[in-house]
Length: 355
Ligand SMILES: *Cc1c(COP(=O)(O)O)cnc(C)c1O
Image (cartoon, rainbow, N blue to C red; front, side, top):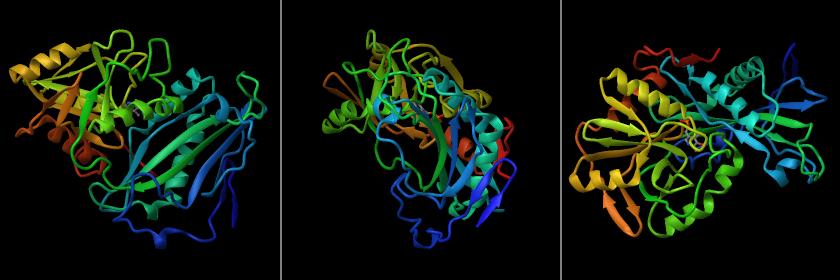
């Protein structure tokens, strides 16, 4: 069935995969919905966007993304409330950020109306894939890559912007122990750490696998120059609670400007929690751990929302962060989830209804 719209071509799947899906048993991000959004850049312009059945791509083996990693992505979630309304959380931030990332990787920016029309149409078409109930959501993955054929190491003239969707349950389960890394770096000054560049992730897998052999689940990255300042936890921004103050690093060119991070800061402030945004030294966290002033560490990001960290390692030593009552992490997570799932008021105007 082909429906011609003025700005989008929609080809619906002949056979939905929905019936065979066990929503109670979903490994994160490995099942995808029936449709995907695709828009090609050619001849100096974004072409007519399409929604087509989810499936493999065909591309030239010399496509520059495969050789030079010219690709960026986003991660967002769609939630369904009790009245079957579908919500996104601050999607304008994701749109702005994918364009900021694109500029850094020399990829043409994607127009807002294409992005939002595509998102709305795709989510409406695959709405049955979004399960109700806390913890259930649809992970939405916009991404864009260079598919110019040819191995010349120069920016290409063909790009592909896509959105795919994966039904998910809560991301991390169980304990999260992190290793403070003092050898490898995630990002460098002047580099691409502030962009959601595909290669940033590829470069994390090896150091993370070494940390995992030592019994940690993730790495806390430190600054590339001195390894004295704490930057991010795996692919999450990180917060430290010292007594009753939350501490987190300011964003810079090696720290990703997380939507969850900036939302945590605003929600915390609205609850009267003091938030100190300044470079965080490894030594002060070790000291605070010793004196008992370190009460909590947590990571935050779209996939996990807020994830408490129960211990950390540094240069062979292991430290525990014991669970506490009235934890900031749980309070902040509950408020954010309430806004995202439309079970709490949204004084910030962050919810976006899919129509
Ligand atoms: C995506 C990402 C985050 C979290 O950003 P959110 O917008 O909150 O999902 C944090 N750090 C890195 C390196 C990331 O790629």
